[in-house]
Length: 142
Image (tube, rainbow, N blue to C red):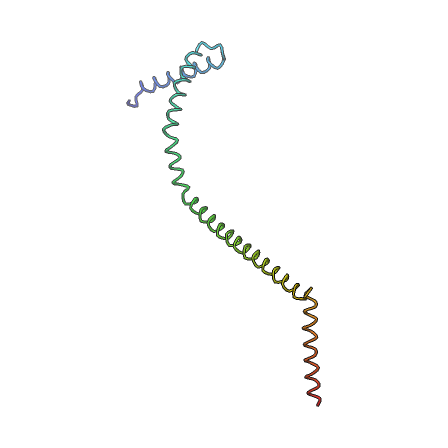
């Protein structure tokens, strides 16, 4: 269509008619004489909108996945690092539990060998060191 005076006149008349129809339809509310036309238009455009949505949604989801892929990859790497740290903590916890069992076993063996507590063993070691120290002092005096 060429940009002519006639084309502008037709466009103006159509625009004015649309405004008149909208005003009449809005003012009369539910009892509007244009209600069947509005329902037909809603059905037609609603169906077209749903069809368009069915076609466009997968394409939009695909494009969204492409755009957010780098951030998702960074998140995956962060989660892998976190999993590695948690696994290391689990291994350390298992090692600590094994060492604790071994220590309890050794303490139990020490108790059956006449050493009821650690103080008695330390006292014997201290007395032995003291006796050795006195003997060295006596040798030095002679």
